Image (cartoon, rainbow, N blue to C red; front, side):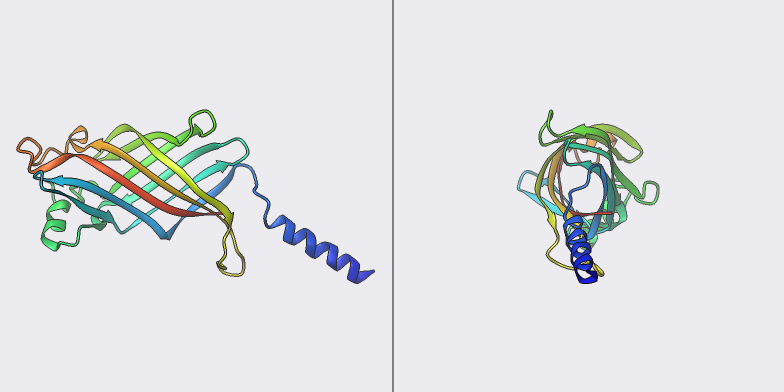
Length: 196
């Protein structure tokens, strides 16, 4: 009888671990988070850059398709374009002005992915200026992770997102008029997030 109870308990624990709970908090896995950007360079080609330090979280109700309390925090001093002199210039007041504005953020309240598929409407704050921004987002996969994190295999969601905005809307005007550096920024976000 004791063995039977143990088997039932084990089955319950295993089945419970794969339940996709409603309205759960997800934290971005910083080891599987990439925030990149593309910007035109004098019409010749686009420069690819990224921010190497970012974090974030959100709430997700899979059954209702509701995403809420989205927060992505980006350390502007972590900008990297594989060119030290250019990266130093990007940190200066001409561009990101990291000493005064050390953080860029994207936040969003409540979005319904069933009524507005693939769209996360939120707010981008850059250089102290906040403007509406819509992320084009695709959920690639939601499943139990095949790798252990600590002692367990958590539920993980994988997302690809992108957006386009004009940096001049945020007061970043350096080299825009002469078209030496593009005004339009293509933002790219790839991440895995673990259910808490």
